[in-house]
Amino acid sequence: MTVEQVRSRNFQLLFQQFKEGVWRDWPKEPERGMLKRFAEHLDMNKIYLSNINNDRKIIGTETRDKIEKALGLEKGWMDQDHTTAPANELERVFITSALTLFRKSPSNAQSELLRAFSQHIVQ
Image (cartoon, rainbow, N blue to C red; front, top):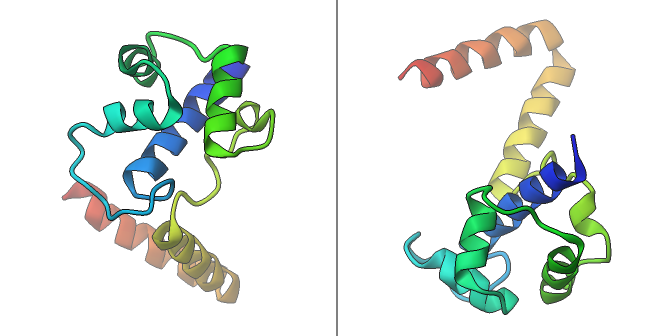
């Protein structure tokens, strides 16, 4: 994966977290207008951010630095893939629960999880 792809994935993660209220003190709001609010929070142009969000522009070094600074992230954070980490508390609980189940009985857990996933994926 290229550094541009890593930055793009991390941007998507950060934007999702912003929409869920991770970067704000107020409750979750409707999806509409969130990219504009995120752009304001980052002190960036909303059209430029929209182009990044839709993979029409890449995140260069200057933009990377601006995002990291605005969100209080350590320098270079955007260049490391953070998308495998849970995006929120609910996802963390799910991953922890699935892992605990799997470790107790790998073969049973695998078949049960696959059965449960296939039921929801098909629907």
